[in-house]
Image 1 (cartoon, rainbow, N blue to C red):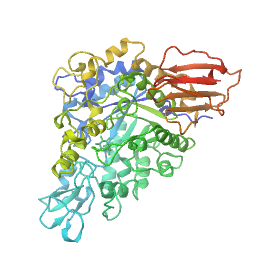
Image 2 (cartoon, helix red, strand yellow):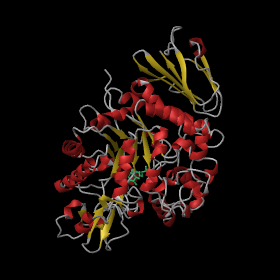
Image 3 (cartoon, helix red, strand yellow):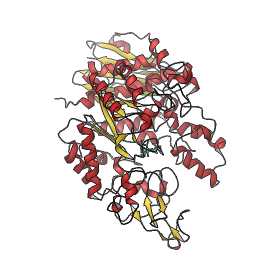
Image 4 (spheres, rainbow, N blue to C red):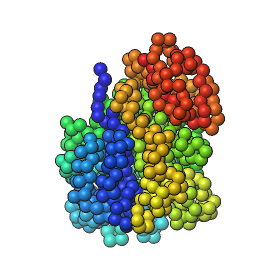
Length: 581
Ligand code: TEU
């Protein structure tokens, strides 16, 4: 029997509210703007929305630095509007999951403000430590008293030391991300209780789950030891990822608030590499009860160590990563499927051809995400085939994860200036995902009547929701068809994946099988027409019923004879999905 769940059958649409739709003209998207577009989401056919953080925040990291978990950022609107959004979504059978960011708070959160006082009861809620004698260690910290270095050598994910010095108490606090994002001390029982209470409060408002920010980093190693200086961040990630008490914490969370509720929970898992057994401890039958995780393995293929470095990816590697996860979680656990989110450059610029074959390659990548086994996540604008942004200077960027490391590297002389690294930075920056949603060919792409907080991609006159919806051959219409497939074919959701030409440089060919039903998916990841013969293992009987279910060229035979599938020739970025039974 099929082990069904709503979140396996769902397509999730991710909204980065700051860049989605602005209704009050302040240049920043808002909750009323999301409400205005609920019918748009319904037309597209998505089943669930993941809303990036909308909580009160000074926005050092666009809402991932939370000052109050139980109130809405004034720029985005009010709690009453949020309540209305939930109702509007639920009225259309669209669920809502919220971002849970509890590895750290803002330094402006009342908990941290109180914790700054060494005598306070909340001192232990964060990681406060004394510095060390700089002569006894082999790392240096710019700030702090002369002769003193930070408690260990960890480097922040956003560049610079992971410790900030506090003059008043003469101690340091840990921040793995920005210095305005101090890490909560999960070893403290009261911290865990406070977080669980907060989660319960949101669940009682009727939400349908959580996307859990960097949730595998909650448990820091005993004694906070320095890491290996030859590794990125001086080994911090290596030491912190999947730390010693992580499953105890998530087990408690499950018991306290999640268990017995039919929720979608997806944990973001930062790691250099994630063995399948580790993943199953979170999502498997005997795991912590998460529905799924976001791993980064495919997102690291073209990453250099720094934002100003990039590497070439190739298709055999990309196939190998997906295949490992498809197979690894086929029996136990469940995959999330994404190539885009608010932290990643646009997939069509990264894995497709955003120029001559933008439309074809955007559809091909969508075909991949919607025909693998797992839950597809569509990031706003992906359904339009939105592309990376042509950043010209540092002034065009807003993201700490781009600006901090670049400024540090320019100051230290490691790189000369932005111009010398522009190509790689433009390919890598998170801001590519954060330029405003392109709604129409109107000024600022119809995103705002004011000045947008970050530049609108100059290609908005060509690429926008209005023109996509008017054109039946658009990426948007194709996405709508892909999303609808899950409702009609169990094999799309539950079929078992098998991969065929692992070493082929430009073709990805796989099947999905559910008892007598099969999908044959053929994807040409290149600008050149490519021919191939049907792999022997994909046997087709003359009596099989063959349908061309979906594809990105419109002249493909809808009901070919089995023999027609012997030899196939795929045009540039052509994707075909055949249904066989
Ligand atoms: O992301 C975790 C994270 O490490 C990424 O930001 C990473 O730096 C990025 O993929 C580029 O390599 C989460 C959130 O998604 C992100 O927006 C936050 O900035 C971060 O946590 C801190 O909360």
